[in-house]
Image 1 (cartoon, rainbow, N blue to C red):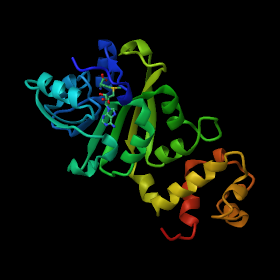
Image 2 (cartoon, protein in one colour):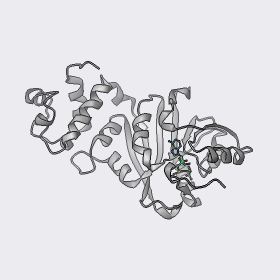
Image 3 (tube, rainbow, N blue to C red):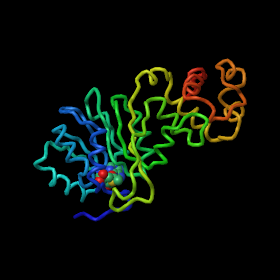
Image 4 (cartoon, rainbow, N blue to C red):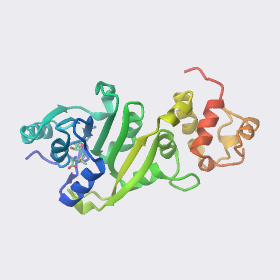
Length: 258
Ligand code: SAM
């Protein structure tokens, strides 16, 4: 059996009831294009293969990859990419719509979600994450969890925290609670963002100074008059602006050179 590698944040699902709950949430349908990130020893991979017949998986650990190919050889058509999911061009999964799922390595879950948000053909993501990260992604405006991550994800997806999972469901158990999160892409909101780079930069700058009034924190980009025209109180703090406020403001800014 391959060794457990801490640097790849390996916590393998061992609770069969939790695996079933996750598979029900993923709801695999025959011939659906599903990509699994971090299949590990195949806790989710085998039941998924049984549901869809063909599966693409991305695993960074060479020993686990070899083990998984052997384990799945009679279970269906497994296409294993042995590489870092953060570096992977998901456009290579040439299908009009794909679902990306996984019990994610918690150390890279946030950069991975930012990476995946760039690909328009990903219509759903179902991820096991650290509970706190799931809470931040789903947070409503004017709460302490609400920030850059909530806005960037909610600008493109409907976010749903489906259920929480205790450390005992994994081996070795993580030090944190986990949650299953469903992100469903809403093409409407991406259409509303005229310049994604500018939107992303605006949100980043706003949350560099979370306590400042927006007219001050964003003074290099906008002014009180423009904020008022958009019905955004200049004295508001960054966490008091809704996702729509950020989209409207980004769309109203003068285009800046790249
Ligand atoms: N899916 C398995 C399960 O639920 O039992 C394993 C989940 S474990 C939390 C995370 C998995 O992601 C491990 O198999 C690990 O080797 C893999 N992994 C870690 N970093 C990765 C990366 N950058 N790209 C792809 N896979 C990665």
